Each structure stands twice: as C-alpha cells, then as structure tokens.
Image (cartoon, rainbow, N blue to C red; front, side, top):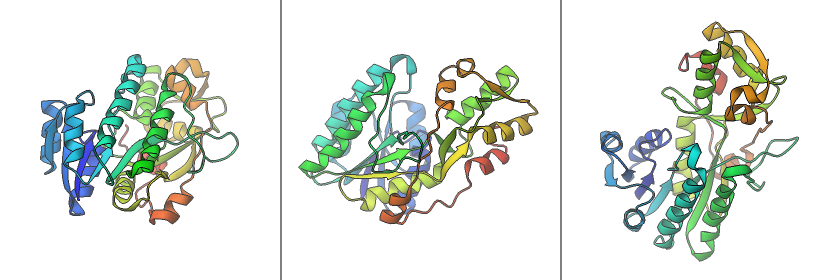
Length: 290
C-alpha cells in the first residue's frame, strides 16, 4: 500500500513510518522544514515538502496514495483557534480526493465522569480545543461518501524513550523547575497511557483493516493514578512528592485535576491489537524522563 503520512517527523510519526515500511508499505511523509525532511528521509521514506496550510500539496499526497494517516496538528497553544481551522481545511482537502481509500486520523480519548471512556462515547472537547470534536465528526462522516475513515484516539500520555514534549515530559520538567514532584489534590485522578510503539502499531492496523467509521482507542494503561506518577518522579529525581493547587502547574494543572481513564476493549476485539511495550510507570522507572 502507498501511504501518505502527515506528522511523519513527529513523535508518533517517527515510530509509525518504520512500522509501515517493515510491513511492506511504501511511505511518503509530509515535511515542513529541512530538518523534518531529513528525519523522514533517514527512515527510508519518501518526502513531500509542505505543511498543513499547503492544501494543494496535501491533495497531491493523498491522491497519490492508497491511504493516509493524519498525525500532524499545530501545537502552538497561543493560536489554537487558527490551528483548528487549519486542521479542518487540511482534512477536507485530503479526504476530498481519496474516494474509497483509507483515512486514519489521530484524536483524543474522551472523559466520562465516574468510569473509563469507551470507543462508543462521544468525544467532547471543551474550551479553546472544542473544535477538535467537530473535526473528528467530519472525519467519520466521510465514510458516507465511501472513504474508509477511522479515528485513533490517543490517551493523555504517549510515552517512550525520546519523549521530550509530551505531558509527562512537561510534568517532569516543571517538577525540576519548582523543586517538587507534584500532583493535584489527593492524586487519585487517573490518566490513560500508551507506549509510542504500541500506538504506532495500532495506526498501522487501522490503516490496513479498520472498517469505515471505526473509532479506536490506543490505550495500554487504562488509568494510572497521578500520585503514582509523582511518586516515581520524586524518587528518581530526589524531589518531595507534594499536593498542589491546579493553578500552580499552569495549563497542566487543569489536565492533572481531571479523572479521565479510558478503555480499549472494543479496539482489541475488533483488530486484535495487544499492547506489548512497557506501561507508563515502568517507562518512568527506566529513567527516560530523568
């Protein structure tokens, strides 16, 4: 299969492209800079220069492929509205030329009060990222015109060796800065998590055989208590484990304050996906985030 990947030089893309190549697929990755192009080329994939604002480039990449995996998103939190508008236009441009081909897009696991979220739960995004739910619905609606579209919902932590910008990496960096290993409240709030290699494997399975309209959860750990995370971080870095108010941790505090476990039972039954990599706490113990 010829596969076009946006975000090919990013955290998940760098795991996915080798996964696709090893499975025998031909891969072209979108690259917005010389540095990104070098990362993609080093994997053995082809390179298509451009970014999510280059709609003609995106149409070219999608039209020349048998399937698309859409991972890219602008993470400048000062311009979230603009990033959402750009992403919506990018999705529309690529899916318009796909016909009956596959389109797999990254999204996020939802939060359901009192229980783990399932694949059947609607994704509800609040605040400035609310528009991402509209994009997820738009992806699934393309199935009505023949696109074999699916969503892979990612948990709060996609961890592994080399993670420098994810929420766990930011939490550890903030801990160093403040001299504490922090959790909000009693720290019983649960975060779902997945190893980056397990996530990449699920994206490949979705591309190859997910039915149109499928919603999948890339969840390895259903819910890791944030206090457990803080305790491992505190022990490894020699920092006191401390309960703080959410506001002390900026935007991260608001996320940490929420209990948001998620399950992947349906995903495992549908595609036979079985996470095999270390869980979040085991990865923290390996020292990748020290």
